[in-house]
Structures are given as C-alpha cells and as structure tokens.
Image 1 (cartoon, helix red, strand yellow):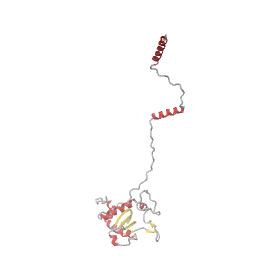
Image 2 (cartoon, rainbow, N blue to C red):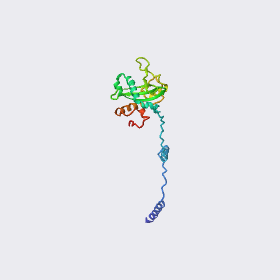
Image 3 (spheres, rainbow, N blue to C red):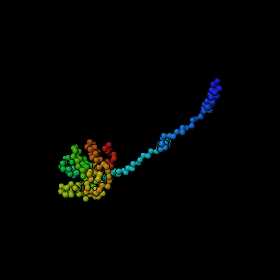
Image 4 (cartoon, one colour):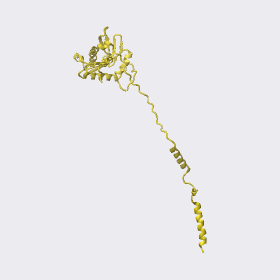
Length: 241
C-alpha cells in the first residue's frame, strides 16, 4: 500500500539528479574575510612578476691620473757619442767626489760607471743629470751637472751646483735654465722646494732615475755596453734586456 508514493518520490529524485549533472555550482555568497588591501597587494605582485625587470648598473666616473711623459732629453751629437768614455771619466771624478764617504780616490774613479741625460745645451754649456757608481762596490752619487766644452768638443771642466751657504742643504741652481730645472723632477725624490714646480705628476717618484741605476747595475756585468744615452744613437749595441 506504500509502493506508489515511493515510486513517485524516487522518480522525482532521479530527475533532479539528472538535471544537475554537468552544471557548476554557483560561487559561494559568503563574505570574504580577506581585506581589500590584501587583494590589491596580490594583484600588484602578480603584475610585477609578469613585467620584465631591467637592472641598471651605476656607472662610476673615474678621472684618469695624468702619467709622467717620457723624459724630454736631448740626443747626443756625434762628438758626444764618440767621446762618451771621456764624458764618463770626467763626470765620475766630479760627481763621485761630491759623496763625502767616497773621497777623492782616482783609482776608484777610473773604473766608475756613469749614466747621464742631456737636459739642454746652450753654446758650449751642456746641462746634464748624472748618476755614477763604483764598478766594484756600492758607492754612488747623483747630481745635476754642467759640462763646459772646448771649441773642439772636448771637456774643459765639469761643475756641480754649489751650496747657497756654508753647510747649507740648499743648492744654487741659477746657472741652469728654468726649463732644465723643471726636468729635474724626473730625478729628484723628494723634489726640492726651491726649484720651479714640477709641471708633471706621477704616482711613482723618480722614474727616470731608477732606469739609470738599473742600467748601471747591468753594465757592471756587461762592461762593453755603453750608457743608455749612447744607445739612443747606436742601436746596434745590445741593450739591457
């Protein structure tokens, strides 16, 4: 007696089930507990992630430090090249004698080695910077010098700067032209305050002076090699490696 009501009820349930197949249930109508600004942050983050990121590398502006140019030395003439051994002998006598520890021993000076740069010339006056050293030992001296020449090109005398006063460490460089005095900055370390200001700048002091000393050391074991100045015009001679 209860079969008919069950039959109709089951049929209705079946139809409701079939009609709901394939449909997506509507979104929940519950109020979200996430605050609006959080959704904004999420949206901005997603936008940022989808945008290409351009990296900027800051450019460091570095002002280059001016370097010391090659020393403006003069090339020796034919007579100076031919007489280089005479130059070396006469320079050694005077320059090494300025070192009080060495004194005036002519035997030592006969075998001494000298390097010099010609910084200028006016008539019979040749302005130099000279480095001399004992051939068999550690004694050395360095000075600006003036060579006074005879008419035939031979050396009349060699003079060094004289002290401004007795027992003074300051020297009188007035006999040297101003442009020659400016070139002293290739050799002095430190640079004397009573000389014209050096027109060049170098993070490495006395660059030319070290070159001259290095060549003297080389010549101690290679006595046939002439000074660097002579090698400028006689390249056939094997220079220091």
